Amino acid sequence: MYNQIQQKELLEKTKFFLNWLKNHPVKTLSLKEAEKIITNLREVIIYHDWRYYVLNDPVISDYEYDILFRYLRDMEKRYPKLITPDSPTQRVASELTKVFPEVPHLSKMLSLDNAYGAEELRDFHRRVTQGLGIDEVEYVCEPKFDGAGIALIYEGDYLKRGATRGDGARGEDITPNIKTIHSIPLKAPFSQFGIHLLEIRGEVLIDKETFHKLNQKRLEEGLTPFANPRNAGAGSLRLQDPREVAQKNLVAFVYQITYAVNKKGETLLGSHLRSHWEVLDILHQCGFKVTREARLCHGIEEVITFCQDWEGKREGFDYEIDGVVIKLNSIAYQQKLGETAHHPRWAIAFKFKPKQATTVLKRVVFQVGRVGSITPVAELEPVEVGGVTISRVSLFNEDFIREKDIRAGDTILVERAGEVIPYVVKVIKEARKGTEKPIIFPKTCPSCGSALVRLPDEAAWRCLNIRCPVQLMERLKHFASRRAMDIEG
Image 1 (cartoon, rainbow, N blue to C red):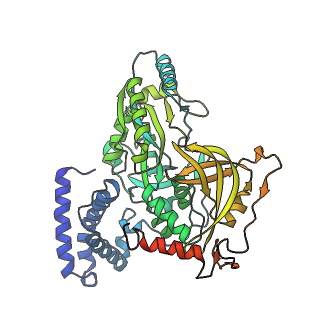
Image 2: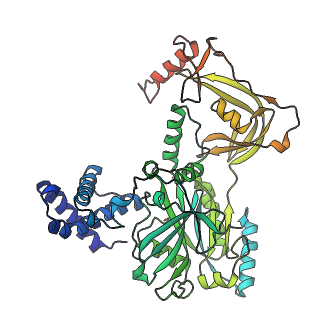
Image 3: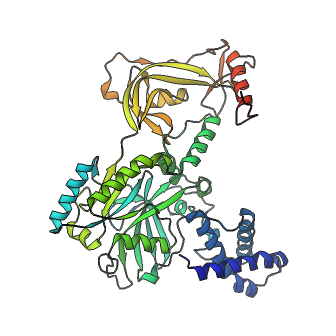
């Protein structure tokens, strides 16, 4: 997005503003003085947003950024006529969004056909080459993010709309929430490439570390944790208060332009925009977060090697990925092959070994935590999920059991949420035989026999006996743990 000369100039402007602002309080500025500096100040802040949210490589401290941002905010508050739609201050709206209206996508958001092994990828390659009547083609391979799909529309370089995937033809307009995601530019220089109106596809994600912290906080608050980062991200996008969305640390990766026209309304895909690799580069130049792990592959054997390599290193990636997306690089070839009602013929998803499996819930035991919360834990028929054998899974609280109608003896679908935590996704009710038994929550503490209490606004039942033996033991363990006193031995 910025060349070396531009970055050097912006860093010099940063240094200038950090010094200049100390001696020029906003209240002393005339309108004419504010007009002279506000554009440059915005440019500086947008540059540092790009460094932080897109490159993950900030060059100023959070404190210095806050000084710049607050000065801009105060200047716009003093002179509201200077506010522009692309100002960094306009990301978070204060109004609640009561309804998310349905809107049509400019192009359908189709699903992808799946491949589960090397031979299925070779079959896909044969279909592609036979359909095109040629022997060899280039593919672009990208990690398949397991997030919430979005469609972004830009017109005249400005973000006009952000929508959910919906049914593929229509989604929900969530523009106020989309604007809170800093890796999505409010203004992007598409006009430099002759593009006036376009629609972009992307995924909204929460990284694994943030997801883990989010679930820890929910558990501490007595709430049911999210099943996986995808659910957490999708749920956050539909919150009514954009200010709450802004606190979720959502990230958006974009991966495709599906519609692009110039000012005359002439389509640019296949003529002006000739390859998917070029599209990814344009998106990167326009300030979007594009996966650095994408690779241009020459032939299907390179594709297979890429997929196998990524299956082996998926655990170490910062975000949830469940496969690799393989796309024909030439957009003209994409257009020639076309699509079915379900999926494009020029793309396929190589799916990793699933992190979900079905098993039988044998029984439930109730554990006492260090603060007295009672947690139901299901004992399972051991099952392998994503390379790990799972034999126990938390059911969190009584509400979770009731909402999912979980019974002893049920066949359940289990998932490793966030690569680590086993989670009951759902009960396979069609597998019930009539012998399953309801799970009865205890009325007294399994450790000391004291009556259990459910406090207002909490999902957990608690033992309030401060001399409860298990609680005392768990407190002692916590005291000696790494997160507390970090006592060795």
